[in-house]
Length: 483
Image (cartoon, rainbow, N blue to C red):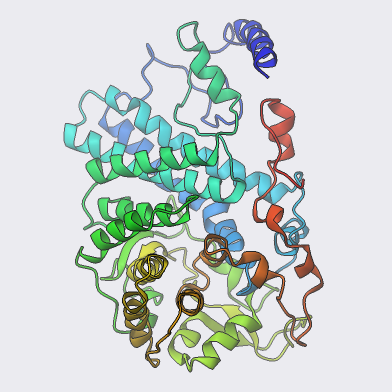
């Protein structure tokens, strides 16, 4: 591989001599910035340009991944939803038959690494803005670092070993050739290295990002929340670190909203439970939230139809409040193996059809249940159940008890199912908790039969394949096992 890389560098150098004679900028994957002519190497000239670049960072939450596929991956691949709709590429998600040529998955890779690159532009070049205050400069670095961490976190959970992107390359010279080569032809870094980069970026955000008062921005407390989940998800979880960062959030003045539905009715945005939410700001804004139409309505068969497993969880717990806020039904002109045309169910947390729909990246109930998971994993069963029962009490259902670690873990997993359905968590939860193959292989249709596709799930299918076009363009990339 080293010999191959040496010859590839020589070939690349020769090509760059030709290409850079025509342009100051090489537009090649994973770099996605529009071609530009630099003014003496200046990328971000002033404060106005810096704010524009920062707006572009937040604008990446309007991408296909964050508006749709994050929820298809987190819920549609899991047992709380049937992925539904009419896109053959997306059917591969649910059937655990993803091909490396899957166009939707390729788009997810592009969206995630485009988001990272957009963050890198701010992190790498915001110092060039001479009229930008030091305070605002540091805030931007903190915000962009947290959003970069969030996207790397998505990548490492979806693909395992994956490229770490930290540099936005605008021009190639002998001085930065090695750095540019590594960005243009990245290798997959081990999962441990990716997590180390995520943690480093979160710590930068804790130091530099704005305080928690603006819940629509990447803020310090959101960085604590992400770190808690990172330490719970990484190989050999650090449960003490998870508890530490959960406690930072829990002590941050957040409270559970008394009425569960107020989390999603669009009349309580930036509420007391919200830690970080993506702000849909209407049509024509950087984030005109179009995802509502993908999940709600009777005009065509929608994505993420609620599953019988989810209904059973709500009904067996007498959980009428969360059921009513999470699922709605209507009579439609179709039926399928899951549901009849009468009272066909739809995911209901996304309701605003005016482009203003917000969605949560972190909220208090998630952190309470995450701390419960960490506590039971360290042997504190009563502490874990106390947190679970806080969440159940807000939902208006009975508190419960448990006598074994395995029982508490199952209770936490079901509680997360009922509390966080259609917020993009379930697939990642059951993978983190080691339950994915067990649960997904038992999924059933509307007649109680195990889904034919459920037998496809295995450990290899808990990671997606590296997109084939990336492999074709970069011989230094390798494919995941089983693909």
